Image (cartoon, rainbow, N blue to C red; front, side, top):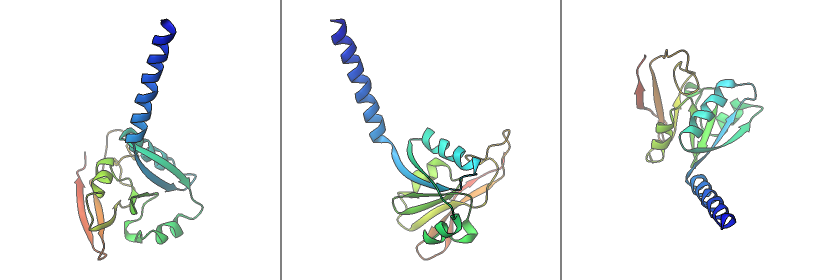
Length: 148
């Protein structure tokens, strides 16, 4: 009887784990090998329901150009999700919202704004915006984050 109960409990844990893994949202992150804040952004995504495929790139500039990231929106790493780019330290909720924006090629938190996910520093933060790039090539503000 005990063996049966242990097997049943083990089966329940396995099924629960597989269900949770299936619910994770896949995203690829491409980054430079020496960037620590990129790893922190990846941790932020994972803590918010994403399954991250982490790729180290030798030439991020060429990678960004190939995937349509304009230099004015550039940051240190680039995510790819459902054919769209996510540039820099974009909060997970804005990455999720991107799937509902058929008018956008991607979103970016240009530069490396202090206080954005992966750039946290002793509770301080700069004001920053998440910018969307439309299919027509225009920038639109998708979210404002105030300074703290």
